[in-house]
View 1 (cartoon, rainbow, N blue to C red):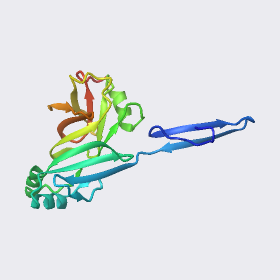
View 2: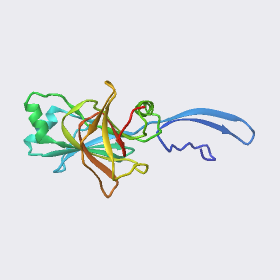
View 3: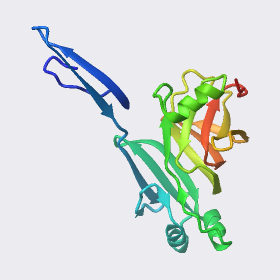
View 4: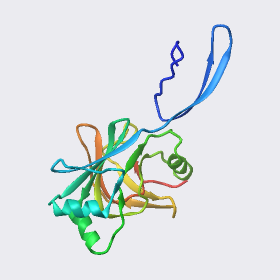
Length: 209
């Protein structure tokens, strides 16, 4: 809060604001800061597709008919890219032709530790470590494996020994992902998964409390 009363947000969440002026008068209020989430979807030729976080069967068929191999789905918060999902159109089209007509909810959100999200509360309650959590909007098995690139804070983890787990909250199951990974020059962590649950990233074997 500045001297002129302007409240500036520094993170997502709720804050109780209490201000006392020079005369001793006090005022309070609750301020809620929400994620400004948006999505964009492009192919390798630069064509933009309608994006609302879901890849429909129609979009898959259109991309395949144009000879597109991959679609790149970006999730943005406050206009900045926080994740990119690389979608294999050939594999997805094969699924569609075999009778799988489910849309794919490709949106993903990076949850930073300590924001008090429902996901993080579940993690804190059930596991001995504090992992980095990547929340996927779709909570089941994906129609085809995807490559995900996310901007996450790995400063508290050994970056050379990362392990990846998918956490199925509904069935309370943890599934270890057998994936390679890399960190690019812009700090994005790249890995592959065919499971779109909440992805837990740690640097030692995940243990339950």
